[in-house]
Image (cartoon, rainbow, N blue to C red; front, side, top):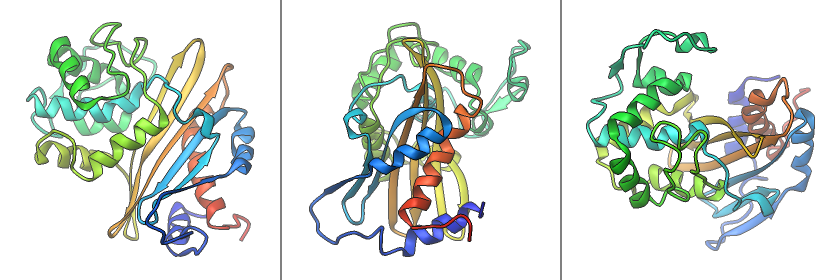
Length: 272
């Protein structure tokens, strides 16, 4: 498989992507994307919004307004709240490991915010939420209208096993507000979170994103949400995958399906 930046170069220059200069939004359903989900044995939905051309690319649109547990995608919002409330000073703010050995070896050490975001370290963000406190957390979720803003289930569990829910389209709405600095946070907090969100940065293309993996009604729920920028251009995406059974590549599917779709949109032949 070619390096990811090949996908991104093609994404910028392909005439297929720039469908229209019509200022009105248009929706393009792509049912053929089902093959990518079938490859990993998962169900799901996908949405990509090309802001320049006001064009939505959608797979399984009936599911795009369906609410799911946000799982670790809430770490974007949680980081903003932690910074804005002063619970976290900056991206280098360290919380000491509690010495509890967990299944992910990467978690078993002291973490700063940047490391905790990249490693999706559950205990760090649970402690962050406890320090923020239930009342303050609820205030911010209501103010942001983040999903259903429901913090029932405990301050350190509401986004894991509690009642917090968000749809793929709501994820896109939140990301658009973040990118355009339209959330009610200081510019400093927003800039720090945008910085720790960067997953890839190559040839002028920058991907800011977050994975998530949770359980809802005994179903695995997987997320990969974020946005891609190139100069002044921006594309937002939300991939939500589901499986009732344990799948060996479930975690990988969240990210790989996105890049397979980007390749499909560009008429990219991986065999070349």
